[in-house]
Image 1 (cartoon, rainbow, N blue to C red):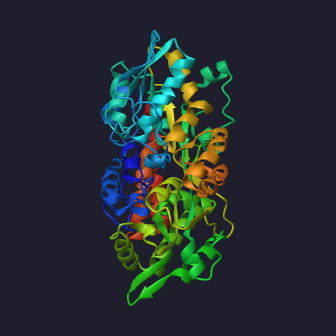
Image 2 (image 1 turned 90 degrees about the horizontal axis):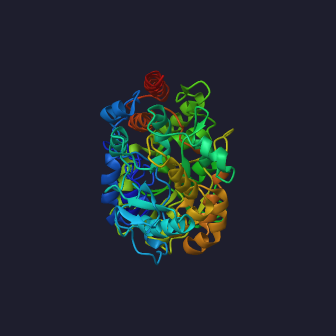
Length: 514
């Protein structure tokens, strides 16, 4: 993924990964960070640096916004959606929006805090202007202060500080992981009354986008963009190994067999590796846990289920593959793949890896002749077709001066027209299924047929749990996986510990909000 993408959507994907390099890119592999996985090697240092900051574990939600401001330890709040097209997407003819520019002449003013904007020349800022132009044309009584907040990442602190001071922006982008915590601290307001009044239909959203915004029986955000993950594979290596390049393996057993046929060694080193389960987006236990049939959160009982037996089985699979492949040998191989102009799988010596749909645009940009395909997440015996998505939403902070106008902007951003304008320029996947399907022919023409393959996975994709202490859960799970891969813990006690510590944080947040 181009480094430019990471400047606007770092997300918490690198959280807790700074100390260990398991896959050659555990940092950049965390989340959208495909820069060292599928981008040029020049982009990798920037990606690594940004994902390394990730986020400190979030403190438990406090009972008030003011206390939340004082106690919050989160830095980069957020789940990047696939703004993959970045520099490859066709830029709008509209001029780039400068920070704090006012768009429109309407007497009613709302402020759109766009923490994802990145640099003035970023695809997101190029997309924001025509998006806003269309909005104020449809609503001439409203003008919009466009504020990029001076950062490419979304940081809880400045947003919560302004809410506590009584001067909140009217519309703010937020990661899915933040919705429940922000609702408990009363930092944001529910949108149900507005949706019911205007008969806003959420059935047009992808399933994950539709449910991620729900917590405690209320709706807390407007889905904007999301991503999805699948199995990418090198067709040339498949053909060389006598495998069908038109048929990716569907089961985990077949994936391992294909990987073994592709893997080659020279002495004590790998010259070619078929499949490293924890490489790229495979490093996150979420996807593997769901594929094994597990789950991580019971929304009805408000209980953490990290130690679900199926999740333990998924982490045990990781441990077994580390022992079988040899961690040091794999690390040496991946490090060697980062030395050339193209790094990671684009170096041409990796058969399969788990990664996200932003790669369609990234590979088109960095290695247009790279012959690869995309298939669903490989399933173990008895597994369940699945994937997972990071979802960006927009929310209405508590205390906005013009809530009706803020809702008008939110409703527009949640509509197909706005998401089509945005995603045609940025290359993201709209949170709306109808907009995604309408945009598909253009994105396939721009980035290749794998866009369609990724989109086919969307109906079975999960989202990270909408729950209190979601950021802490995300960070601590990352560390848990690292500890098991490095032989510091065993899967069962590690996930037992994760369940206990996360439940304590959840209970603390719930108690503070009661």
